[in-house]
Length: 222
Ligand code: DHB
Ligand code: MG
Image (cartoon, rainbow, N blue to C red; front, side):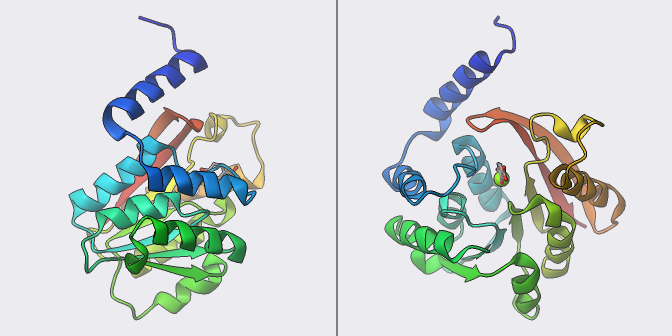
């Protein structure tokens, strides 16, 4: 038995990725293109991408909403999980990121299942009112806006919709009272909303993966 050290955690993550997730040319190329275009390497880890993929399939989701496309890595995982008549609508604030993502989702062969809407979430989300409800929502954008995104997830979802909120631990900062920046305040506000807002029932999980020590909340719209 080894002690919990960053090296040990990374070795376990590599083992799990090798054993259960594998590698994939389209996903690898999406990461390479994202890096070449100068986008930050803050996409979900492979284990997290596979989790999103499985949650879509487990919940039978046809319509997925993603807030925060970045270079399309998680988008590909999500799009591969929806059926042929399914749709992933993904919102990206930066037009440059959206262009990188469009090339990567097309190359992965899921372009017809992905709609990329360019603009800030708070501006784009109201336009989705009147569309059929979303079955799974993945929130992975600016942390300051987490409560806005959760509110839209509840409004655009339905009872039974699965909501996944990324980056709820942030290297432990969420539970450190000395950390009081705007991002961590947004993370805490999101978690308190998941606790207090009767539209949600939720839990939180810490993750130790290729992206370090972070976590996700998983919520059900009730
Ligand atoms: C950051 C954002 C993310 O969504 C993430 O998964 C990791 C880091 C960031 O803004 O630093
Ligand atoms: Mg994230």
